[in-house]
Image (cartoon, rainbow, N blue to C red; front, side, top):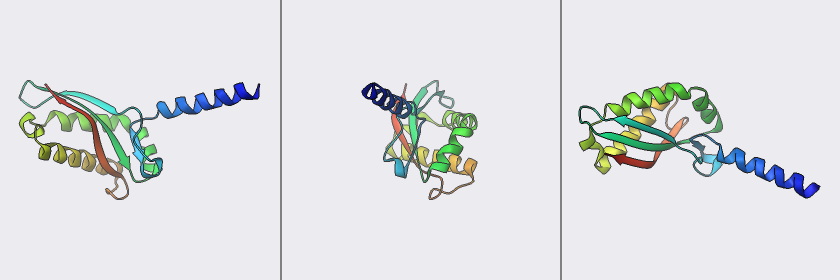
Length: 129
């Protein structure tokens, strides 16, 4: 009976880990299982951007705040992403600039800096069609 209880406990911990949102902290040792996904029309081009991303955060409190304000985060990022030009996003420099812009928008929402808030935006999928 103890073995069954222990197995159930391990499965619950695994499920909780896999259901984690798209925020990672330095102490956590990596990114969450499910990134935030966005599919937006790019400005004046008739092209579509599909992007998945996770955020590396400075500490767990930032992670918690991002969860609470998730609808506002999604709104701000949709506005930002849909204002981009596809020609710029096709370059490495354009992708890096976008990641920095996203980080800056998030830290402004959080009233934090890159050292105390969102440290880095990591793209896990980036497709322009």
